[in-house]
Length: 251
Image (cartoon, rainbow, N blue to C red; front, side, top):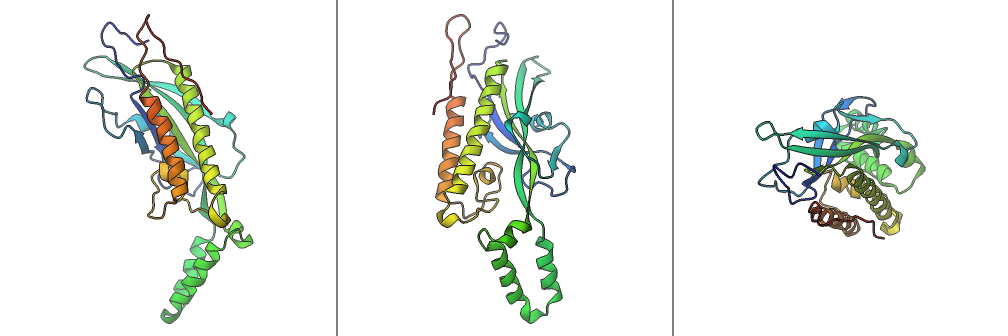
């Protein structure tokens, strides 16, 4: 437990954040500046605003994209960092897990535009319509070939006054599995087997790639995830020597 002689924080968790890139670079191994993709709660606590540099502690070498590869939970890395307030000396802890999240990029997206540029002004509309229909053809062979599945570094991080490292780490592992299960489930259940765009997915919403056409199915899954997060944030902190809090996974 933290040094309760000086200060005792009544919150078990202060913040939960998602860090990465809103729009990952298609060029592999090129580092991008990490961004705060999502945070809970949305408002700062009066006694402890969320530090702006948390994202750089999560991804100190920048947000990196890598080529297609087989991913697994075993490839998740976890670590702890500290945030020390200079004036008071108060220490907060960041418990972070990093992993590579798949995202799709178009392999021949520029080719369609080249065709438009080479066409006459009067035929631009027909060429663009053809290009769009080719891209939107569900599960077609040409579409599968036109997509390359890359992976971008993504961070889930808990910030807390309390050093319950193993428990918080397990919560982050559970959260990652929950997000991926909801993401996959929403993609499988799409009406007519239509393919989701990058923005109209659970990961798309959570990473800030929102659009006006988010399906009710995706929003339902996002609400399930956010309800789980808010319940975790509302968990009371145990009083040393008097009470304890048990965190368990429910089906």
